[in-house]
Length: 116
Length: 322
Ligand SMILES: [Fe+2]
Ligand SMILES: [Fe+2]
Image 1 (cartoon, helix red, strand yellow):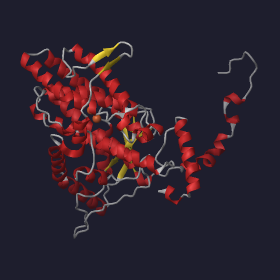
Image 2 (cartoon, rainbow over the protein chains, first blue to last red):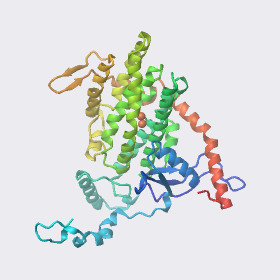
Image 3 (spheres, protein in one colour):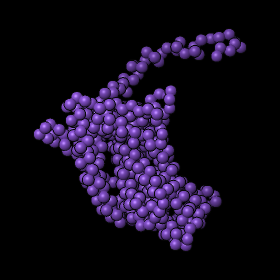
Image 4 (cartoon, each protein chain N blue to C red):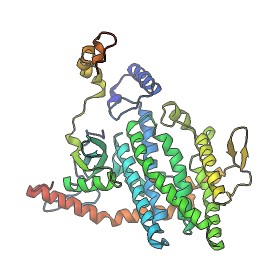
């Protein structure tokens, strides 16, 4: 995932009516998710910089779908993404890691019987 | 970054754990702990790579209006547009390491950044478009196919995406070469001249020999690189020589010979003085390329300003577009 701690900001000059008018600004970062085909999940493709959602959509289309890679696009402000911290990954995912009985192979079946 | 607050004794344990992960073939992700040096090396390598994609548009962009047919013109536009995309994929990967794209772009237009030396050579004839696709994109494919297995996740994923697109670049270039090779004597001569000019610079694209490349050992240890510069160069030569033979083109190296024992096409001495001159800013087109890039950047300022003003206005009037 791209820097989700990045801030949405304009660094440029603000004109009299409060509009940001400099070209030397860093547009906010958007994460892009593409769905490769109907029924497939949306997967992270990368990110784009854009001024707003519509602009992000257009940039994402031009950058990540030049060869029919997607039937659907999501763009999400990078700052809106909350990610798990790698340092805590052990304890955080622990509840799901020590439960062998949630897997089929935990269970014995009489020999010679096809269960699946 | 987090590691600045870490005591030295903890740091060595973290480095050991990091190197163990690399050794186990795990990929490193943006929020994982990494040595500052690993981060720096990646920022250097990835930003240079991104800049190369962007500057790489210029020599070919020159020829779009002079493409000899509509088919060739469409291909060239699509290829140049792909290169812009490649630049964006890699800038986006570089940003995951905590740098601003804006800052990287400023380094490029200010002339403080490095990019591939190959783009500082002029494109003098239409045949150069064929030879760039065949040799330059061909060399890039060899390099990028291995980089797709690099230890840093975002870089590897950008490379996978890029590799899928590069094959078209190479094939359209080789098609141009093969067509000219079957053409009139003047066309053949134009092609041979382009090959003569681009062959050695293409070999230099892999960088100096590993014995002279200060970064290589560290990059290999951390699996940022998976093969040495010399190994990649040899692989490229072995792939390319048969392609040259197939279209009846001569590669400008009298020492080029097949070694039965190793299965390698051995080649002559590379002129590294030329390489370091071009990298150091003294290539035939360094100034021209940067001036063109700067001009495009400056002339695009009003578009960026208008987009920012439009977004701010939308935000103020509360009619956020979907
Ligand atoms: Fe490329
Ligand atoms: Fe390419």
